[in-house]
Every structure is written in structure tokens, then in C-alpha cells.
Length: 123
Image (tube, rainbow, N blue to C red; front, side, top):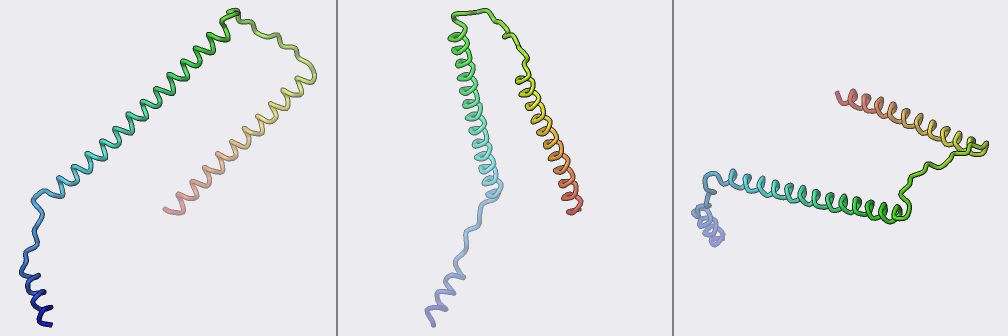
């Protein structure tokens, strides 16, 4: 019991070192600098990858154009022959495109209504 009191007395007499002036400001400044460096590294890496992919696509396009057009440089539009079967296929395609357009319009409308309802609910 006396040892506990002695330990408590010694611990109370020891001064806790205080942080220097501006420690928090310097620490926050270092943190912000580290975050900015990370953002800048990510931005540069993204630009490098995007540039590499773009150059690859352009070079592949040039290669394919050169390879496929090496023999014949004349561009001819194919002649279109309209038959009843092709008209029905085009009609079906237009029908599907029209349905997709209607579904997208309905989706946009219902999302707008739902978002307005959600905003009004929280206000």
C-alpha cells in the first residue's frame, strides 16, 4: 500500500512535456503536403496511362489502316438493295430502338420524380 502511494506521488511530481508552439499547425501542414503529393502522383500516373493507351489506339489504327488499305485505295460505297426481308429487319431494329428510347425516357422521368421526393422528404 505504501508503495502504491509512493508511485502515485512520484508520478504526480513528474512533469509531462508539452508540445512546442505551432506543433499542430506544422503537423497539419505536413499532412496537407503529403495529400497534395499523392493527388499529384495519381494525376500524373493517370495522364501517363491515358497517353499510353491513346497512342496505342492511334498507332493500331494507323497500322490497321495501312495494312487493310495497302492494296486498294479506292473507297466505294456498297450498293444497297432493298428487299422485303431487309425492310422487315430494319423495321424491327427501328421498333427495338423506339422501345429503348421510351424505356430510357421513363427511367429518367421516374428517377427525377424519386429524387424530388427524396429531397422534399429531408427538407
